[in-house]
Amino acid sequence: MSKHLWAVIKQDRTSIWVDWIIQVRLRDCSIWTVKDNKGAWGWRKMLSLRHTLMSHIHYRVGRGDSISLWHDPWHPLGPHYPVPSGTSDDQDWNFDKLSIVIKEGQWNWPLITDIACVEITHVLPPISEGPDKISWKAKDGSFNTSRAYEIFHPPVPRFSGPPSCWAHSKFRRTALFFGLLLWGDCLH
Image (cartoon, rainbow, N blue to C red; front, side, top):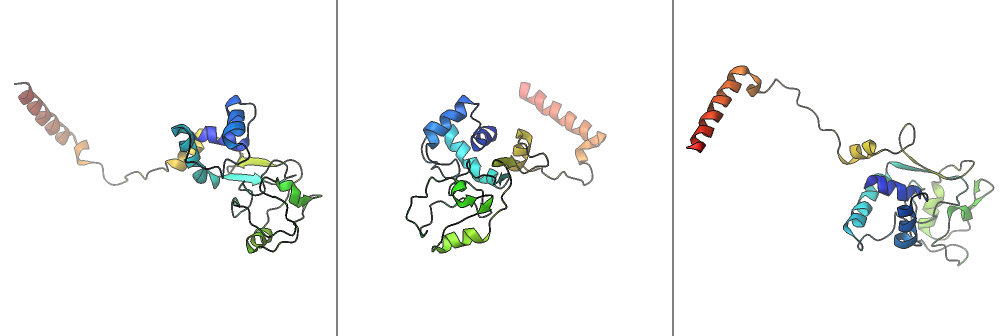
């Protein structure tokens, strides 16, 4: 499931399934803010994983033309949906891309009167040259299922005490004897 979710997050348009998910299930929403109360079990299960994976995904802001301003977790505070009110102009910002607040490689926010918007503008990530990039928080930045498995199944500490008493040969013989004795009783 996490591999499919990663493909939707990256918007890998080479997959017919991902393209269908983006056009039919998401429409104008983001995978991060779409409601998870409708659809098949697999779809709901995939959506239930997204908040766990969110902390392991990094959005590098470039031109801002592929990142949703309000629906994607490009900001350290996460997605900002529902859209805060109080911008200087009354345009509908709900489906805008991040590029509308980037001008010549710099942040260019309009006059803001909403306290939630002011908080957003005080902690802005740096803008990189080139296109936006979504990567996995790992040394090489790539996703693989074993790393995702470790997120959902952290390693359990191994018992480092003395070996179990049943490892001793005398106890194994005794256990075998009683096992055969009981098994023999079951057959009669």
